[in-house]
Image (tube, rainbow, N blue to C red):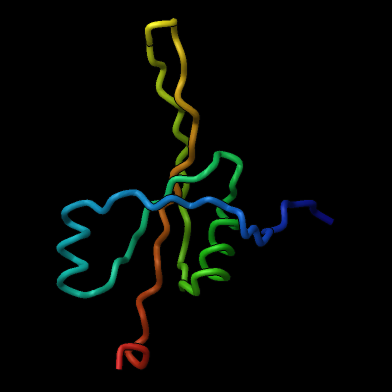
Length: 103
């Protein structure tokens, strides 16, 4: 038997959407649908948890999730050096809506 981390439904999971690029804005104005969304979340969140959260809470049809760990920037302030917190970017690819849902 293999042990793996099971996806958990977390109602307190924070997924902060990042701003859309100009190309995404134009595609949305043309079709009314976005193929990919980008979210900022905690580094400990897995792909399965992001997918389960979006499908369970928001009812989105998620095709796949890609993630990218981002290290916080090192900054220099008046009192010395400090670091901004690390975070994870989640790139979520959505399934196209069915033609029956559009009508």
